[in-house]
Image (cartoon, rainbow over all chains, first blue to last red; front, top):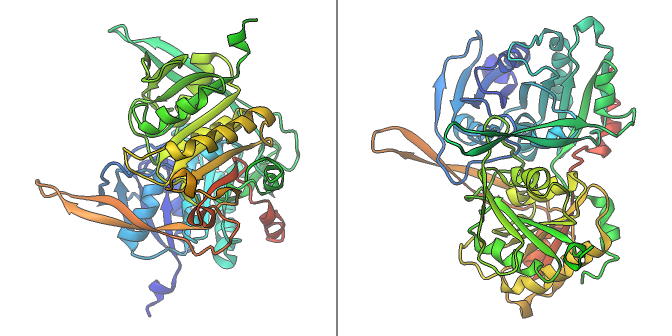
Length: 261
Length: 261
């Protein structure tokens, strides 16, 4: 077996599309850790959640990637979850040793995790039994500066490669918008119980038809100091172990007292 | 206050689109329980997971619905989750007393819950603090026979209206493909740890380009008799309390032993 094939195989994906700065940064962070394959959507797919393409066809093409040392790069017409499935079953023909998604341009802390294509790719990795991590920076800007995240990404990914992750879990890692020296460290957290108070910006087209843009404000009544929102507000990187078992196990005993036989 | 306004307000949505038989059946089941408003996608949105439309505009229009007694019906260009948000913040201007989604044409048991637009609408209801239920029948056919589900839907929805649901949870209800007399009853379950072994059917277009259809086989190594898959296979209706807190709380202590400070 050659030296190259013994290095871990790392799949890099995202939801902002293969042209985003965040995925180039993440791929660069992975190069010292293993062989890197990029499979990402051909355009921005934010807010896609765990969508999969089952009523339409998928296409993909091999392409160049602006980073020396990448083993291969592919863009697909699909969602982030489609990218993970295409990578495993069609491109690699096997499961990678590590899946990383991001770095997302914008927060995936608190309830954002359920709307996030970045995190859904990581959750899909966990479903497949692959150690998987989603990374996000609290800066929506296309030109966001990801440099402060490098040492943290390296340490987290290095440890996940070494130790694996508890079965059925992946990591949801969010970075505050701070320079490296201002980041106080990392905290393992729970998902804060925040939500969006939605609103719709109602407009009229030149031809007179009505359309809407979704807007809204994030609202976090959860004042716990063990949450991702608290960590980020206080200058820490938040790390939330995230699972695909959605069962509310604590509610089973309550429902078993109902008339549901 | 008039009699009509004291009856509970029930929002009905789905992911198979407003023309599907399943949503007409579900709306009919709700009529004896309260005032019924239907807000659903204008076309099939299966597999959309928790997708929301943030990079595009949304449209909606009031329309007729083939069922006497419905208070209003709307179709939207959005995903199931978009429909819930539009209903609350733009159409109703308030939260309904109950949200029901479905009846889905096909299973949303086990891991299907995370890909399901039907269940994502119910989960979004739970995020909004609305007692919410997703219903699915193990029959993909457009002409599936939903009649056996009626008494169960009535009992479950009636109890949820009366008692509410534990905070942060909704219900994932799946029906076996059986006639009423053959259904043994209902079981409160956990989500079975199954997954899809995906495959891609690779084809060539007339112009010579390659495209893929996602296929695959469902695989359920979880032999527990407390799972939704076990219940359905054994002739029961499965009821899984489902939550949007994705934190793997049991994994926090493990990660706190890592070098993540």
